[in-house]
Amino acid sequence: MKYNAFIGIGSNLGIPSENCEKAIRLLNTVSEIEVVARSSLYESEPVGKTDQNWFVNAAVALKTSLTPEALLDAVFKIEKVFGRKRLEKWGPRVIDLDLLAYEDRVIDSTSLTLPHPEMTKRRFVLLPLSEFAGDYLHPLENKTIRDLLKELPEIPEVIKISSAS
Image (cartoon, rainbow, N blue to C red):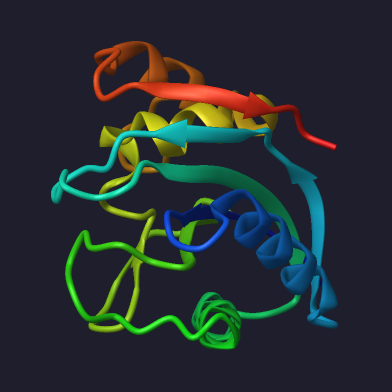
């Protein structure tokens, strides 16, 4: 059986737009994952630790036969391909892949929280996601991605830098 999931993508080291594109390609190379939709690329101000380069962000929709935990493991393996080391919360990163949602599942375990607990507060997540999943109903907020996006302030700034291909 195939399940729907959303992944948020971000990078602010090296050539961030190329890192995001490569991550999307690598997700598609996992036999149990099919990228079925992707957003444009967006540039956004860093959150939390602001004295660093702006981020390039995107989002993808997947069909997968993996469980949520196995999908998270696959995502971490792709981050390792980039040499990602989790050294500093909100610090710079060559790639960041976040499992945002998996169907309408709500999970709160030591290894995984779904939906992603910060997604409803982040324009740089909701704006890309709204391109293909605006009608997705957040299972805890009981609001669509489009409605959650409308509730967010315009700051920090998020700028579209390329269209989905």
